[in-house]
Length: 559
Image (cartoon, rainbow, N blue to C red; front, side, top):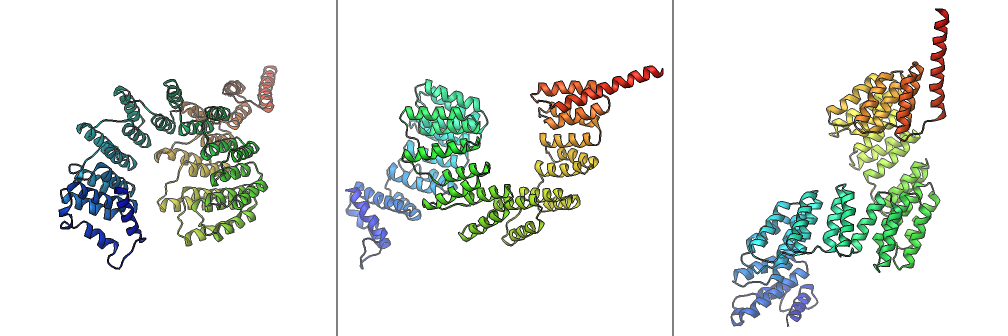
């Protein structure tokens, strides 16, 4: 009657059974005394220990469970694999991986192990990111002659994917087939997810199709993974085709499925369709959660429908959900973007009054909002508040503040802040450099802009297309078509795409210099890249051509 014994021990540990004659610890000590157990046969003795250990595990008393397991082993009693697995699982979940690894290796020769024991340890290795130990566990399992199973391989494949070693994950997947192990839906899904995260989207979609042709039916987790990737790729129609397929197959979609699709629709600015999907979700008996509301509120903020966003915010609260810091950040950002800074500050105050602490992201959003409005006093107050709360500014914070000085045409202060950033141990990134280069180009200081541009490579930063386009416009502004064309060529070599303004500006400078043939060649290249020139570009080239022809005619007449 083992379950009854465990139940009694649990009731003692929880205090539901009490007595003046014993405490929980004194009773357990009494039950495990060697002299008491002389009259017990070995089997009963083992069961008594296992009941005690299992009860402590269930009550999450890990140290006590370990103590009695070690005591049991010291008494030359061999715990069953289930008891050992319960303790090992509890130890792995406690987050002390090194301790779990030591415990596993010290006790494995003194207890009965099964494939599940190795599976628990392997999962711990993978979750801690120590794949070498994971493969060591696999080798130990093989050496002991225990049967390999799909769960073991799936765990290791998942660990490889999470560690970014997709090549090794694919090798393990093929090895499974060689061993005659049939991959299950979860095996396929972890590998598909790993391929997507590594940017190998085509391979991920191909594996999904192979999965179906192999007769392995995708589960809800698989479909959610594929639907999410289609939404990321902005292929919302394909995402809904899969959603319909799920419904046809009788798979019950969960809140996660709906949240993915709602997010996809909001990304496409189809916010009213997203709201209809929430209604459909409710009719299916699934209640919207905080993530559902956050995505919908964000969608309406992004299309400027802030009244609707606030209405959803109120609905969220009336449905018994508590707004998170993310919810407030979304709304604060929405109001900052349209210049309604009073409302943004009101939400900021509400956030704090509800016991939430503003994050660095919250401050960055507000600083950016006041930066656009040119309100330096409010920015100073926010920075001071951050210092008081010991929130260290990030790269983003500094870049926003530098941008504020650039907008105010105070380049000296912008560069002072740039120096402060470096002194604080932060490395200015591509965006920081972009803001400073933009300010210098706007001032017509191309010499300093060029120095900063070239200096990026010295700190292992590659200028992006935005910075190249800024530099090109700067050179065009000072009439240097040669330098602008040189950067354009550099962009093409790096497979960066010049924008319409870059092409148009260079064509304008070339035409002004009477180099209409070069301007026409650039125009053709611009059209070939898929950009549509404005009528004024054609007019500029046409005028340059006419001016050149007139000049030639005048020269001929003079001669």
